Image 1 (tube, rainbow, N blue to C red):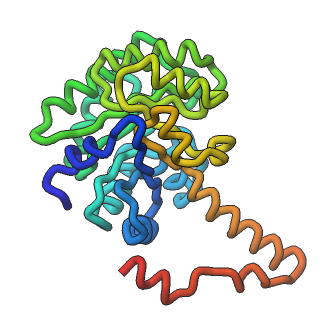
Image 2: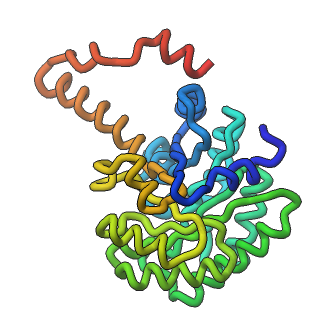
Length: 270
Protein backbone atom coordinates (compact mmCIF):
# COMPACT_ATOMS: atom_id res chain seq x y z
CA UNK A 1 0.00 0.00 0.00
CA UNK A 2 1.26 3.46 -0.84
CA UNK A 3 2.15 5.33 2.36
CA UNK A 4 -0.29 8.12 1.57
CA UNK A 5 -2.85 6.87 -0.96
CA UNK A 6 -4.83 10.08 -0.55
CA UNK A 7 -2.06 12.28 -1.91
CA UNK A 8 -1.51 9.92 -4.84
CA UNK A 9 -5.23 9.96 -5.53
CA UNK A 10 -5.53 13.74 -5.24
CA UNK A 11 -2.70 14.29 -7.74
CA UNK A 12 -4.64 12.39 -10.40
CA UNK A 13 -7.46 14.97 -10.36
CA UNK A 14 -6.52 17.36 -13.16
CA UNK A 15 -9.42 19.25 -14.80
CA UNK A 16 -9.27 18.75 -18.54
CA UNK A 17 -7.04 15.67 -18.24
CA UNK A 18 -9.35 13.08 -16.69
CA UNK A 19 -8.28 9.68 -15.42
CA UNK A 20 -10.59 6.66 -15.35
CA UNK A 21 -11.63 5.58 -11.88
CA UNK A 22 -12.34 1.87 -12.31
CA UNK A 23 -15.15 0.59 -10.07
CA UNK A 24 -14.45 -3.03 -9.13
CA UNK A 25 -16.19 -5.51 -6.87
CA UNK A 26 -13.65 -8.09 -5.71
CA UNK A 27 -9.92 -8.72 -5.50
CA UNK A 28 -9.89 -10.38 -8.91
CA UNK A 29 -11.40 -7.47 -10.78
CA UNK A 30 -9.17 -5.11 -8.81
CA UNK A 31 -6.03 -6.97 -9.84
CA UNK A 32 -7.17 -7.28 -13.43
CA UNK A 33 -7.80 -3.52 -13.64
CA UNK A 34 -4.41 -2.80 -12.09
CA UNK A 35 -2.62 -5.18 -14.47
CA UNK A 36 -4.29 -3.50 -17.44
CA UNK A 37 -3.17 -0.01 -16.47
CA UNK A 38 -5.76 1.49 -14.15
CA UNK A 39 -4.45 4.41 -12.08
CA UNK A 40 -7.04 4.20 -9.31
CA UNK A 41 -9.88 1.94 -8.23
CA UNK A 42 -13.23 2.42 -6.53
CA UNK A 43 -15.85 0.27 -4.92
CA UNK A 44 -19.40 0.27 -6.26
CA UNK A 45 -22.30 0.01 -3.84
CA UNK A 46 -24.50 -1.56 -6.52
CA UNK A 47 -21.89 -4.12 -7.59
CA UNK A 48 -21.11 -4.98 -3.98
CA UNK A 49 -24.79 -5.33 -3.10
CA UNK A 50 -25.29 -7.66 -6.07
CA UNK A 51 -22.58 -10.01 -4.76
CA UNK A 52 -24.63 -10.28 -1.57
CA UNK A 53 -27.89 -10.90 -3.44
CA UNK A 54 -29.30 -7.46 -2.66
CA UNK A 55 -30.47 -4.50 -4.75
CA UNK A 56 -28.64 -1.17 -4.70
CA UNK A 57 -29.70 1.73 -2.52
CA UNK A 58 -29.11 1.66 1.21
CA UNK A 59 -28.98 -2.13 1.57
CA UNK A 60 -25.35 -2.27 2.75
CA UNK A 61 -24.21 -1.62 6.29
CA UNK A 62 -21.17 0.50 7.03
CA UNK A 63 -19.31 -2.50 8.44
CA UNK A 64 -20.00 -4.47 5.27
CA UNK A 65 -18.81 -1.61 3.08
CA UNK A 66 -15.64 -1.15 5.14
CA UNK A 67 -14.77 -4.86 5.09
CA UNK A 68 -15.37 -5.00 1.35
CA UNK A 69 -13.25 -1.88 0.82
CA UNK A 70 -10.40 -3.39 2.82
CA UNK A 71 -10.39 -6.39 0.49
CA UNK A 72 -10.09 -4.09 -2.53
CA UNK A 73 -7.38 -1.99 -0.87
CA UNK A 74 -5.35 -5.10 -0.03
CA UNK A 75 -5.55 -6.46 -3.58
CA UNK A 76 -3.28 -3.85 -5.25
CA UNK A 77 -1.06 -0.83 -4.55
CA UNK A 78 -3.49 1.53 -6.29
CA UNK A 79 -5.44 4.20 -4.39
CA UNK A 80 -9.05 3.18 -3.78
CA UNK A 81 -12.10 5.41 -3.44
CA UNK A 82 -15.11 4.16 -1.47
CA UNK A 83 -18.65 4.45 -2.84
CA UNK A 84 -20.15 5.04 0.58
CA UNK A 85 -23.66 6.10 -0.43
CA UNK A 86 -25.04 8.61 2.10
CA UNK A 87 -22.24 8.07 4.59
CA UNK A 88 -24.35 5.41 6.32
CA UNK A 89 -26.33 7.81 8.44
CA UNK A 90 -28.35 11.00 8.36
CA UNK A 91 -26.53 13.16 10.87
CA UNK A 92 -23.27 15.02 10.21
CA UNK A 93 -21.44 13.27 13.06
CA UNK A 94 -22.09 9.90 11.44
CA UNK A 95 -20.59 11.15 8.16
CA UNK A 96 -17.52 12.36 10.06
CA UNK A 97 -17.10 8.98 11.76
CA UNK A 98 -17.47 7.25 8.40
CA UNK A 99 -14.57 9.31 7.04
CA UNK A 100 -12.38 8.33 9.98
CA UNK A 101 -13.23 4.64 9.62
CA UNK A 102 -12.69 4.77 5.85
CA UNK A 103 -9.22 6.22 6.35
CA UNK A 104 -8.41 3.49 8.88
CA UNK A 105 -9.47 0.94 6.24
CA UNK A 106 -6.84 2.34 3.90
CA UNK A 107 -9.10 4.17 1.48
CA UNK A 108 -7.78 7.19 -0.40
CA UNK A 109 -11.17 8.89 -0.26
CA UNK A 110 -14.90 8.35 -0.28
CA UNK A 111 -18.00 9.82 -1.87
CA UNK A 112 -21.00 10.92 0.17
CA UNK A 113 -24.29 11.59 -1.58
CA UNK A 114 -27.27 13.72 -0.61
CA UNK A 115 -29.86 10.93 -0.74
CA UNK A 116 -31.81 9.61 2.25
CA UNK A 117 -32.48 5.91 2.54
CA UNK A 118 -34.81 4.11 2.26
CA UNK A 119 -36.99 6.92 0.87
CA UNK A 120 -34.62 8.02 -1.90
CA UNK A 121 -35.53 11.67 -1.24
CA UNK A 122 -32.76 14.28 -1.11
CA UNK A 123 -31.67 15.73 2.20
CA UNK A 124 -32.62 19.38 2.66
CA UNK A 125 -29.90 21.45 1.02
CA UNK A 126 -28.64 22.99 4.25
CA UNK A 127 -28.35 19.59 5.93
CA UNK A 128 -26.63 18.14 2.85
CA UNK A 129 -23.98 20.86 3.08
CA UNK A 130 -23.59 20.43 6.85
CA UNK A 131 -23.03 16.70 6.41
CA UNK A 132 -20.19 17.43 3.98
CA UNK A 133 -18.81 20.12 6.31
CA UNK A 134 -18.52 17.57 9.13
CA UNK A 135 -17.01 14.96 6.83
CA UNK A 136 -14.49 17.47 5.46
CA UNK A 137 -13.47 18.54 8.97
CA UNK A 138 -12.86 14.89 9.85
CA UNK A 139 -10.83 14.41 6.67
CA UNK A 140 -8.64 17.44 7.39
CA UNK A 141 -7.99 16.18 10.92
CA UNK A 142 -6.53 12.91 9.64
CA UNK A 143 -2.76 12.32 9.76
CA UNK A 144 -2.70 11.85 5.97
CA UNK A 145 -4.46 13.16 2.88
CA UNK A 146 -7.99 12.04 2.09
CA UNK A 147 -10.14 13.03 -0.90
CA UNK A 148 -13.78 13.75 -0.08
CA UNK A 149 -16.25 13.71 -2.96
CA UNK A 150 -19.64 15.40 -2.51
CA UNK A 151 -22.42 13.98 -4.64
CA UNK A 152 -25.64 15.70 -5.67
CA UNK A 153 -27.80 12.83 -6.89
CA UNK A 154 -31.09 14.60 -7.62
CA UNK A 155 -30.68 14.56 -11.39
CA UNK A 156 -30.02 10.81 -11.28
CA UNK A 157 -33.00 10.15 -8.99
CA UNK A 158 -35.30 12.65 -10.70
CA UNK A 159 -35.87 14.74 -7.58
CA UNK A 160 -34.34 18.02 -8.80
CA UNK A 161 -32.72 19.53 -11.88
CA UNK A 162 -29.42 20.99 -13.00
CA UNK A 163 -29.84 24.39 -11.31
CA UNK A 164 -30.47 22.81 -7.91
CA UNK A 165 -27.63 20.35 -8.46
CA UNK A 166 -25.18 23.17 -9.14
CA UNK A 167 -26.40 25.13 -6.13
CA UNK A 168 -25.89 22.08 -3.93
CA UNK A 169 -22.44 21.38 -5.37
CA UNK A 170 -21.42 24.98 -4.78
CA UNK A 171 -22.58 24.70 -1.17
CA UNK A 172 -20.68 21.47 -0.58
CA UNK A 173 -17.61 22.95 -2.25
CA UNK A 174 -17.79 25.83 0.25
CA UNK A 175 -18.21 23.22 3.01
CA UNK A 176 -14.87 21.62 2.13
CA UNK A 177 -15.46 18.95 -0.52
CA UNK A 178 -12.43 18.10 -2.66
CA UNK A 179 -14.28 16.70 -5.68
CA UNK A 180 -17.82 17.28 -6.98
CA UNK A 181 -20.16 14.82 -8.64
CA UNK A 182 -23.68 15.11 -10.02
CA UNK A 183 -24.34 11.81 -11.81
CA UNK A 184 -26.01 11.82 -15.22
CA UNK A 185 -26.72 15.46 -16.12
CA UNK A 186 -29.19 15.58 -18.99
CA UNK A 187 -26.62 16.69 -21.58
CA UNK A 188 -22.89 17.25 -22.02
CA UNK A 189 -23.63 20.98 -21.94
CA UNK A 190 -25.08 20.56 -18.46
CA UNK A 191 -21.91 18.74 -17.48
CA UNK A 192 -19.91 21.65 -18.89
CA UNK A 193 -22.02 24.01 -16.74
CA UNK A 194 -21.18 22.03 -13.62
CA UNK A 195 -17.48 22.35 -14.39
CA UNK A 196 -17.73 26.05 -15.26
CA UNK A 197 -19.84 27.05 -12.25
CA UNK A 198 -17.81 25.24 -9.59
CA UNK A 199 -14.17 25.42 -8.59
CA UNK A 200 -13.23 21.86 -7.62
CA UNK A 201 -12.41 18.84 -9.81
CA UNK A 202 -15.57 17.29 -11.27
CA UNK A 203 -16.33 13.59 -11.65
CA UNK A 204 -18.40 12.34 -14.59
CA UNK A 205 -20.12 8.98 -14.82
CA UNK A 206 -19.53 6.85 -17.93
CA UNK A 207 -22.98 5.30 -18.10
CA UNK A 208 -26.08 5.53 -20.29
CA UNK A 209 -25.66 8.10 -23.08
CA UNK A 210 -22.28 9.14 -21.69
CA UNK A 211 -20.82 5.82 -22.85
CA UNK A 212 -21.01 7.31 -26.36
CA UNK A 213 -18.45 9.98 -25.44
CA UNK A 214 -14.71 9.48 -25.80
CA UNK A 215 -12.22 10.41 -23.12
CA UNK A 216 -11.13 13.40 -25.21
CA UNK A 217 -14.69 14.73 -25.14
CA UNK A 218 -14.78 14.48 -21.34
CA UNK A 219 -11.45 16.30 -21.30
CA UNK A 220 -12.82 19.09 -23.49
CA UNK A 221 -15.72 19.48 -21.05
CA UNK A 222 -13.20 20.08 -18.26
CA UNK A 223 -13.85 16.85 -16.33
CA UNK A 224 -11.10 15.65 -13.97
CA UNK A 225 -12.31 12.11 -13.29
CA UNK A 226 -14.42 9.54 -15.13
CA UNK A 227 -15.95 6.85 -12.92
CA UNK A 228 -17.84 3.76 -14.05
CA UNK A 229 -20.30 3.30 -11.20
CA UNK A 230 -21.86 -0.13 -11.60
CA UNK A 231 -21.57 -0.11 -15.41
CA UNK A 232 -18.65 -2.55 -15.59
CA UNK A 233 -20.41 -4.91 -13.20
CA UNK A 234 -23.64 -4.57 -15.20
CA UNK A 235 -21.69 -5.54 -18.33
CA UNK A 236 -20.61 -8.72 -16.56
CA UNK A 237 -24.20 -9.30 -15.40
CA UNK A 238 -25.37 -8.93 -19.01
CA UNK A 239 -22.95 -11.64 -20.14
CA UNK A 240 -24.17 -14.02 -17.43
CA UNK A 241 -27.82 -13.22 -18.19
CA UNK A 242 -27.49 -13.81 -21.92
CA UNK A 243 -25.51 -17.03 -21.52
CA UNK A 244 -28.06 -18.40 -19.07
CA UNK A 245 -30.94 -17.36 -21.31
CA UNK A 246 -29.40 -19.31 -24.18
CA UNK A 247 -28.55 -22.39 -22.15
CA UNK A 248 -31.72 -22.64 -20.11
CA UNK A 249 -34.05 -21.31 -22.77
CA UNK A 250 -32.85 -22.90 -26.00
CA UNK A 251 -30.11 -25.34 -24.98
CA UNK A 252 -27.35 -23.40 -26.74
CA UNK A 253 -23.88 -23.07 -25.23
CA UNK A 254 -22.22 -20.94 -27.91
CA UNK A 255 -21.67 -17.92 -25.64
CA UNK A 256 -19.43 -20.01 -23.42
CA UNK A 257 -17.03 -20.28 -26.35
CA UNK A 258 -16.37 -16.52 -26.22
CA UNK A 259 -14.61 -16.09 -22.90
CA UNK A 260 -11.29 -14.82 -21.60
CA UNK A 261 -8.97 -17.84 -21.51
CA UNK A 262 -8.27 -19.02 -18.00
CA UNK A 263 -4.53 -18.70 -18.46
CA UNK A 264 -4.91 -15.04 -19.45
CA UNK A 265 -7.13 -14.29 -16.47
CA UNK A 266 -4.71 -16.06 -14.13
CA UNK A 267 -1.80 -14.04 -15.50
CA UNK A 268 -3.63 -10.75 -14.97
CA UNK A 269 -4.63 -11.42 -11.37
CA UNK A 270 -1.47 -13.17 -10.17
